[in-house]
Length: 320
Image (tube, rainbow, N blue to C red):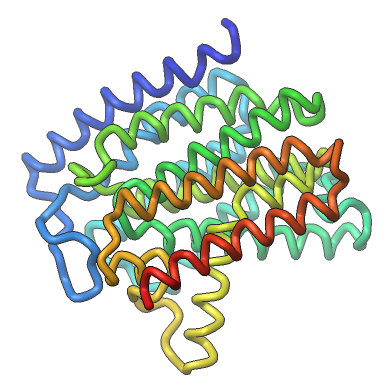
């Protein structure tokens, strides 16, 4: 099969499966009801992430993605679904996240060096694990408005596929990345404003883990500038917001509406308008990731930082 047919087939399968999941969730009244921290106004089915995972897990298995990655995703999906339904305590959830990240590190292999050999092996693995743990949680934190997490998944996975395919390094990541991008695009058919279904933790947590695997595997293959650039907006928004809440003495694990994208929504921007701004910034980050060989990594990273800063200022201006 031509690799670039993979996202088309995955998108079609993702759209069909998400539609079936949405109807099942509605029949069973598994709904996300609006509250003071919500960005939606009507009860909406929650758990549409099963539509993505229903494509991703079997196709990745067929493509030969390592069993530790698949095991980590499956474990996270099972526990996150329980959390969606019954609100598990933070402690058990964190232990499961740590176990999944440990499985992911096994999948990367003992010789993998995300930090390019600048650190001792044990410290490289430790910091990679902590970064991965943060990434899968920040992806969940950023899943707060219609279309945002799904479009980010398309951009990051699509960017990895382009960089891996064109650059030649980490070429084994191209097909899994294309499948993830396609499945997320199929989900967006149902999640674009006005959303007919939400991803839920069952989608956002395993998806954050899967994207983390793509990014850290790319970084360990030498594509670390691209691995920094592609998720930069999500990382910046979540990290800045967490730091501000810590400094203000607010509980960091409590749901809130203080992310830059959420503040723009509260100021009157539509979900679709905010997501289109993020998509535009992500397109620029993909171009910069592809341009690293020509520009060099310092100018590319600097330009990426300025791109994300401009986006955040735009969202802040909307909220002012």
